[in-house]
Picture 1 (cartoon, helix red, strand yellow):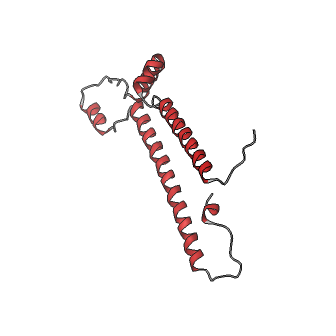
Picture 2: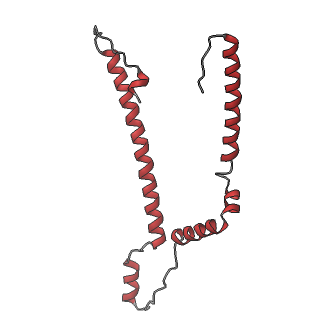
Amino acid sequence: MSTTLSSDPAEIRNRMSRLRKHVDSDIQKIIGTSSGLFDWKEIFQRYPQTVIGAAILAGYFLSPGRRVVQQVKLDEESLRGLVDQPAEPSPGEMLRETLVQTACSAIAGTVASGVLGLLKRNLEDWLENKSPATEEKSTETKSQRYR
């Protein structure tokens, strides 16, 4: 199906109006289908067993766990040894600490990458403005350079 474009202003206005209506309906469809993607109630209604399983696993791995009570002798030497002994973190606490460190590292890396990109762009612009004018001007635009 071949479409010829006319230069008639009325035809262009009509075509633009049809396109706008089509875009509006497409946006409404997208909003309608994506509204439930982040609604936890709807996700729970669709996949109750999966959500409960994920909650159980998260609770198991993120909980501090059961602490083992040690048998203690109450003589003076044993008590001094217990006082001098450093407290050991539980496996849950160690996992939580590792997850927090990993998340912080990922966020810091993303921020550093963004900052370096901005610095690079600003430095290129500054150098371009400070360089002496040449006879051959580049046809490259900023939008082409930063793709």
